[in-house]
Length: 230
Length: 276
Image (cartoon, rainbow over all chains, first blue to last red; front, top):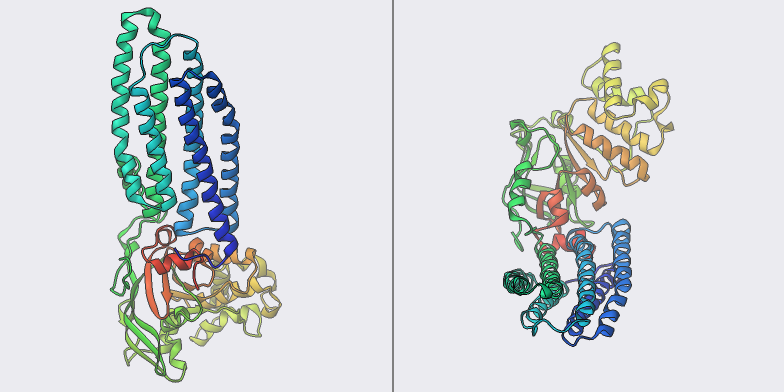
C-alpha cells in the first residue's frame, strides 16, 4: 500500500499495529504457559500467567487511547478507518483471551493440588487448535489477508466438537465417582475457556475480513434484519 | 468496479437513513452523458457520465486541477464565457438539454443558481442584494419584494441576524453572513438547483457549520451540487460524492459508502491521504 503523505500519521498507524501485535503475542504466550502449567503441574508458572494480566489490561487501555486519538485528530477514512475500527474491536477480544488464560492458570493451580484425574489428551489438542486460530487471526490482521482469516472461521467447528466430546467424557467421570467431581469440573471449565478463546479468535478473524473487504460477515441472520430496516 | 472508470450512466441507490420514502425521492435532476471539455487542445473533462438526484446534496471532490470546478461550471454554462473552450456530450437539467442551441441562458441561470468561493455581495444594501434577481426578472411590487427578501433570508438562516438592518450595506456583514446572503440572493429567484463552488473555504469552522446545516435544510427544496477541497465537508454534508482525477470521474456513489469502502484504489489513496 502507498504511504500516507503525512509520515506522522503513517507512523501512528504503524504503532497501533505494533501495539496490537505485542498484546497478541503476550496473550498467545499466556495461553501456552497456562497449558504448560496444567500439563506439568507447575503452580509457579501458572502464577506467572496470572501476574501478566495487569500488563494485558494496560495494553488494552493504551490501544483504546491510541485509537481514540487517531479518530479525533486524523479523521481517518476508508481502509484506515476500517483498520482503526478493527483495532478497537479486537483489542477487547485480546483482553478477554488474556482473562481466559488467567482463568485456565487458576484452575491449573487448583488441579495441581490433587492427584491427576486422567492423562490429558483432548485438552492440549484444544489448546493448540485455539492458539493456532488466534495466531492465524493475528497473522491475517498483519498481512491484511482475508483468506487467512476465512481459514480461522472454518477451524472453529473442530474446537467446538472437541469441547462437546470432552464435556461428555468428563460427565461420565463425574457420574461414576462423586470424588472425581471437583477435578472433572476444573477440567470442564478449562475446556470451556479454550472454546471461548477460539470464539474470540473467530471474532478477530471476522473483523479482519471487514477490515480488508469492507464487508461485515458477522451474524448473517441479523444482517438481513438490518438490511430490511434500512 | 475496481480499477475501471465508472463512465457509464448510473443512478446511485439511495439508502440513507433519514429521508422520507416516496417515489419522487429518486428523481434524476441532472443527467450528464459523455461530457468532454477542452481548454484549447487540453482535455479537462474526459467523458463524464453521471446522474445527480433531485433534493440531494452531491459533492465533487478531487485534487486541484482534477476538473471538479470545471464540471460544476458546465451545469449552468459558465464555461461558455471562457475563450477556447470546447464541449461535447450532453447535460440535461430536468430532461432539457442545456447545450441545445435554443437554450435561453438567462432562464437556465435562473434555474441553476450559483454560490462562489468568495462571497461577492453587491455594494448595496442587504435588501437590494436579495431583491436584485427578482427585480431583474421584472418584479417591481414593494410588498412582493419584501416578501421574497424575508423568505429568502429566512431560508438562508440569516433573517434573525439582519432583520433590523436590511437597508444597511451588505459589506458590513461578516464573511459567513455574506456567504449566507449570497445563498439568499441565489434562492430569491427560486432556482431548482444550487451550485456551490468551495462555499466555505474562506469561512471559520462555525460559519462553515452553519452553511453545512443550511445545505441540509435547503436540499428539501433544491438540488445542491457542491465542489469542495475539504473531504470532511463532503463526508459531513453530502449524500453522494463524485471523486474526480485528471478529468475522469473515478468513482461516484453514496457518500457513506465512498468514505468507508471506496471501490477504486485511487479514491482510497485520495481520501486516506496517500495522494501524491
